[in-house]
Image (cartoon, helix red, strand yellow):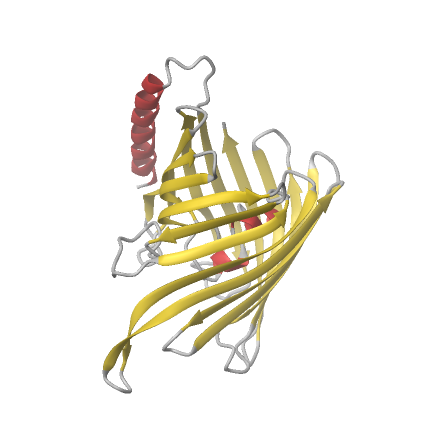
Length: 336
């Protein structure tokens, strides 16, 4: 199955590269960027289940093609392979197929594109190959969706963006008449994993949906909302960040909350140490259902394009549920 997916990836990517290279043939300087990214790991868990406590896994495999037709128009095409949630099969998805149009009055983004609600926080955390950001991990929002977006700056340091999307994510088709609106605004540097500086900002999303209220036997329009605040700082090899996120679902009177704090220190060009701690409350109206999640480890970069990260994870649960400890060895392969 994996070999079939890779062949499909390469066939589609080859066709895209061929077609886009024709359109860009007349450019004096090539703006093409072709890259691949693979997240691979080995896991050993203390959970007493031999089917899951000792395994190798590919978490993600990306193939990306980017190009610019002019100074005003650039585009991105990205394929994503990963496990299906229900069947566990490895499958391939189109994750990005977007045009970024610089109008001179801001950028307009059209098509399948990354969402803006945790894009800055993910770069402050900086280790997607080890773990998703807390908002992504807890399902507060999809990472990509079909959307129309706009982004710009106020002055030199205040960045903002607004997206109008389907709300179903990149793996599902639109399933209702409503649209999701998400907004992001932050002050400072948005890519702290590669640049020094600081940031502080917030995100918000609003998505109406039909809710079948069985108490009054009527379908009502309710809303799913997400609110988040974040901050980060990076200087001379040290990078720290924190965020608070809240998800609410009207009609069901359900509110979820998550807090995440992370730190990273580059010892030298080859080694980094990192730590992160998350708290998660799946229902703020109920007691004894909270969770804690601790990650700590080392990142070794033996050669360009390869990262090796031995780490330990401890999950704690309120109530009478035992904690779980997992040992992982994460790998990132970058091809460019």
